[in-house]
Length: 313
Image (cartoon, rainbow, N blue to C red; front, side):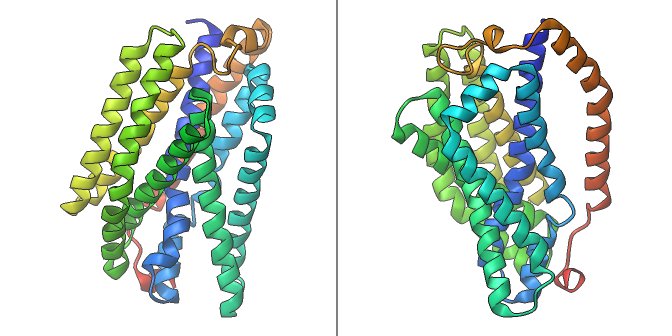
């Protein structure tokens, strides 16, 4: 495998990991006020992401950093073409981080309300904008970007609701399941429309990988449907696996469709750094990536237990 192909696959993996892990963070941030009836339940919902949300953001830093190092022309073109959306994403991430950090340090209701607003808006902005940006990379037009943003936003809500149901007990868990079923009314039809558009973009680009893109898109649709059915049956762990699989399969289909021209008029070979840079990056990645994955896996294992309202308070 050529190093350009390898690093394109690594960047696709990093972006997909970001969407899977931060996807439920965004969903929890948006849903926590809606499924809570008092302060203890609100803390219970937010505590599901308390130990992991900042670590999950590292995937975005790694993905963007890898693009900068391995494909500087792709990095520059993407950020310059979508400068305003990227700035809004950064503003949202800052608002969310400040809200999550400050919420436990303020005591007045009005102060907590401002923190909750920052968490909600700071979660919704990246969830919508990233979907719109990647949809715009595949299809020109406002409608395509809007469909991609709505799908991404609703999928994060579904993913977050399932995660809350997996990590909590009592009334919050029951409401999270109901929220997941309610959100699925939007996610399923919008997802079918959005996912059906990915293979068409791959075929139009002449990549020759259209069958693989179709396979990923159809598998993602099936995983979405399975997540709804499993949530209905109360199988929280399998439902979360299904939503995570749907996001991962969507990412696989998306980046396969973007190969080998991630931006109009720019191929991966033209965007890549020199052989020496790619070789150095490969050795660094071989050393660092296993440690990052092992550390994050250990973190999730340590905080694997369900949270009660009393424990979160």
